[in-house]
Length: 247
Image (tube, rainbow, N blue to C red; front, side, top):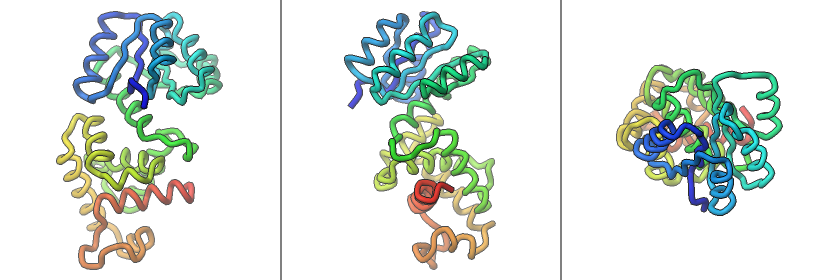
């Protein structure tokens, strides 16, 4: 297991400290802050990490991503950038790095976006060839087709959970630790509120959805007395369709 959830490379000392502290305290992530590229690379080589995030404008940042890519350590590479250029896009695609647009220096907004990437990296499996954004889009399309209102908090929580479960089916076998707790950390909530919000969203969906639509997705596994799937079943069934059918 890697020692760090994220290695964070940023030359601005105060900004780096504030960002790392927020990621630790709000999202319970193990953060290795680094002001020097050599320091970040050493931590990656010696201790390992789930993700390496750099600011593209930081001197040595893109070069650090190139070196990290050559290590083939299975680390997710993320470039935070204020300005998108064709050269940067081409370079990031070549390295297999995600681009995280950041038009402001809002530390809370950036922390949430980075946490989303890092928590997704914890759930990733090489068996699904899709970016987290693509998996979330597929999950959202399924929920929308079933009539789930997108303004509900539970809808947003389910989108993340389904995207993760599409990568690792076993996550739904331990909903508390593998789904509710990571989603709660990501959205600044609690596991019990996440579970409740998901359940409420599913109830609203079932009120709006035709019985034949539910049967098409859930088949005979749907409890006829309850008339609605539990959280784990909805997440597992939609994730399975994404994973096996590419829908």
